[in-house]
Length: 95
Image 1 (cartoon, rainbow, N blue to C red):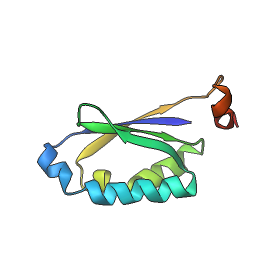
Image 2 (image 1 turned 60 degrees about the vertical axis):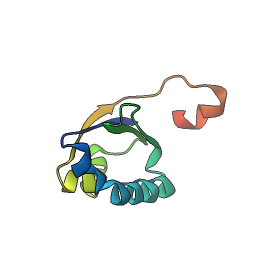
Image 3 (image 1 turned 180 degrees about the horizontal axis):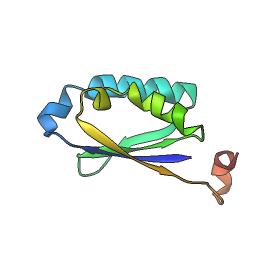
Image 4 (image 1 turned 90 degrees about the vertical axis):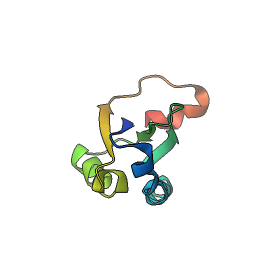
């Protein structure tokens, strides 16, 4: 799994223009199963995404499609981890 910590590196006004296309990118990858959940940070200065396990090169190719990166308004911290325990209703994440 990958936990993606997104931080804006430009002023919120510069990011705002790219929010709709970023949202469409998120929706497309939620539908494909590449992204398991996504949401904004409470601070309003970025967001968090949980992406399924895949080769890192595949993840990087997906991230290259994101308008936030294409327009250099955000950076991604990629945290690669293995889920070893989960609540019963989240057991599918262990696969």
